[in-house]
Length: 173
Image (cartoon, rainbow, N blue to C red; front, side, top):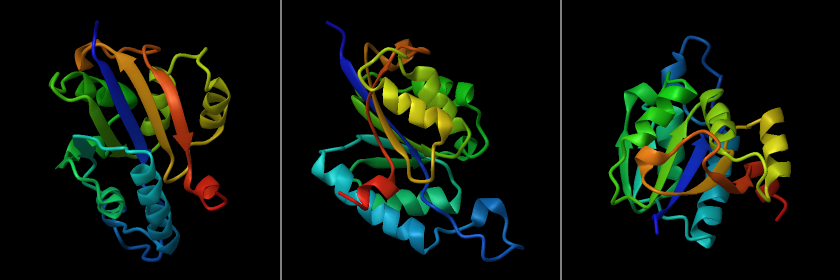
C-alpha cells in the first residue's frame, strides 16, 4: 500500500506596510500578523502538526511566520519560493525525498492559493472550504492536504483537502 503523505500550505501572516521605501522582500510582520502566528502556533500544536521539513520563502514576513510557529522539524529557506508560480512550487514538492511523510510550505499569494486549488480533488468532503479558498486565501491561511504515494506522484487533483483554517476564524474558537 502506498504511503500516506501530508502537506501543509501556509500563506505568511499579515505584514507591515509602514515603510513605503522598504522592499517587498524585507517587509516584517505587523502586530496583527504576530498575533495570528500565536493563534496558528496553538492550532498546529493542538492538532499535532509536525512537519519533518518546512520549505520557506526567504522573505522576512515568511521567515517571521515560521519562527512564530515554533515548529520542531527542519526549516529550509528557499529563495525561489518568493517569486515562484504554483507549477514551480508543485515541481519543488515532487522533488522531496520519500522518507518525508509530512511537509509544510510557507509562501505567498497568489501561488499558495492556486497550488491548494490545483492539488485538491474537487469532490472531497471539504469542497465547501475549496469554495472559500477560491474566493480568498487570506494572510495566515493554512490548508492541509493528504495524498497516497510518493512526493513524485503528487499531481493536480490528486490530494484531498482535509483541513483549512484562517487566523480570523481561530480568534473566535
